[in-house]
Length: 141
Image 1 (spheres, rainbow, N blue to C red):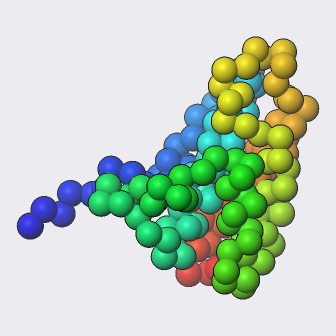
Image 2 (cartoon, one colour):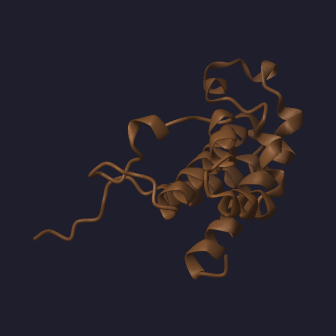
């Protein structure tokens, strides 16, 4: 029997996107940094769903009905049937609401049209999400 890891790993992806976003921001590439901070948060939320027992495909990806993007994903995750998990998440990631104007479609936009004034909030949400994920995996949350 194969012990090959699943191809989709939201936790690992959240960290990778965050670290790349930080590197891009330090290099002055704010538009792409913003995109990756958002993807980090999105992957982090999906990792939370997996941790809470959401159904996944054989490759590790969430079931089709849960493959959403920000900001819709934030709404769905923060209204989880398990109210305790939802309130724990919003307390652990207080900047989550700052993702309201991040869109996956930004990847197609001109840099001058992106809401880059929101970048500090997106970065904060991504940073808080990683701390939340670390606490979840260590059992502290």
